[in-house]
Amino acid sequence: MKLKYTAAIICTLAMLTSCERLFMDEVPDESPVSVFEQTWQFADREYSFFRMKGIDWDSVHAVFEPRISNNMTEEALFDELGNMLYLLRDGHVNLHSPFNRSRNWSWYLHYPSNFDYNLLERSYFKTEEQFTGPFVLYDFGDVGYIYYGSFSNNISNQNLNYVADKFANHKGLIIDMRDNGGGSLSNVYKLASMLVEKETEVGYTRMKNGPEHDNFTQLEAVKATPDEDVHFYNRKVVLLTNRLSYSATNYFAVCAKALPNVTLIGDSTGGGGGAPSFTELSNGWQLRVSSTQLFTIDHQNAEKGVAPDIRIDLKAEDKDRGVDTILEAALAHLRN
Image (cartoon, rainbow, N blue to C red; front, side, top):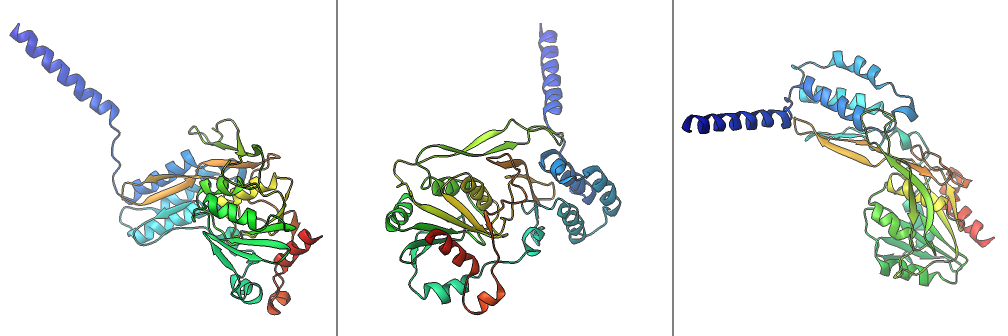
């Protein structure tokens, strides 16, 4: 009996050890070659726009692999990985290290800025603006105006109700989101709740769900939903955008584009329709890539931006004389 009992313990320990090997992933080393492979593989598995952008990721691997060696410095490795990720042409793709953050800002740097807050402050507000929560408010008398600079700044029901009530009898409301680089989607839905009287389908989204580049979930409807505690704004609305209107602002533009009482004026948004997935590489660096896709109500992929209904630039000659061309077009649109 004692021998059988001892044998049973040995077998059990052997099984536990075997199971431990079976379920524990091998921890990758921190060598540059390993970190390169981790970076490439995570993007290969999680990034959602290879097909749409026509990127041959295997060819990218073939180009960059010979440049990586285990005796290179951290800075040199970071630069090579950043150059590789740059080819994804995506502002949501970033590599974070203690000494730098990789980025691709070509989606807005190659376009006119179309915005100058200093111009608004000096030529329009003239110290008469209000600061209501995250909003800068100005009353043109017949048209209301709010500037919202970041979806990272939380919006309350009280903020929205004050805006809806203050401008309830005006000809309309201008929501200026130029240079709003994004933030929280919860604030997107919060602001949209003021603009709809009933639940409204405004777009679609899907996410990566497998290792292949075309592995996605089915399209899921994006809906703007009213809030019983938020007053409905039933006048016309103009949304001002430029190329630096990105990420969550791009998401809001998709929602607004689907609403019959909203007109987009200015430049196309910068895009950023993919919500990021994150990982930590074995050397402690943080990596994120876009892993979802966003579509407009007419099934256009919003990754490259949302086109305005009325395309107009901030003209240099207007700016020189204290006039915001895009804002003036919004005022004219609502007054007419």
